[in-house]
Structure formats: structure tokens, C-alpha cells
Length: 112
Image (tube, rainbow, N blue to C red; front, side, top):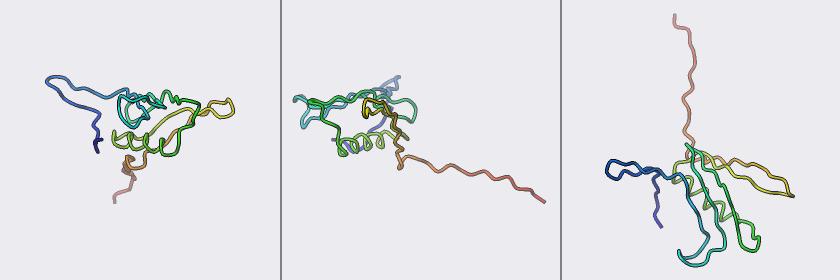
């Protein structure tokens, strides 16, 4: 696969922006997949809207790191997703540390 991804691409007079992605867990494209997720971008945030697996397999840490790396390459700042635990929905936010830019600190000083 490619090492860098861009969210914006110019073709002629048009700029195409990646807003929604379908991710498949599969060894080779076109083969049957055992997990699928839908991701939507909004500004600097990536939302994982759906996560479905066959036979109720949980997504692994390796799977989560793949989503993190994808978001990092798209220069996102956060990933938002919901997780069901004991029948309760829990919203989660993951910071993409590499894409957090330090903010300038403004200090007021008195000039004499």
C-alpha cells in the first residue's frame, strides 16, 4: 500500500475531498472480508461510524492501530467512536499525538 495519503486532490477545475471511507479487514482486495468499518471525516476529526465483524469477533489492538495510522496519514487530530460495553454505549476520543501542533502562548506584558 502507499505510505502517504492526501485528503484533497485537484483534477482540472475540481478539488476532491475524502469525506467517507469504507475499511475492510481482508488479506487481498476482492476476497471475502471478516470485518468492515465506515469512517467519516469532518474537519480535523475522524469518526468511526460502524464497526462490524463476522462471528462477533472484537477488533484487536492491531486493528485499532491501523485506524490510528490511517488517521495520522490523513493529518486528523482526533478519532471519535462509540463502544458497547455491557449493553451501554460509551463514546471515546483518541488524540492523534503526532498531528497535534503546539499552540502559541500569548502573554501580556507591560512595556515601560
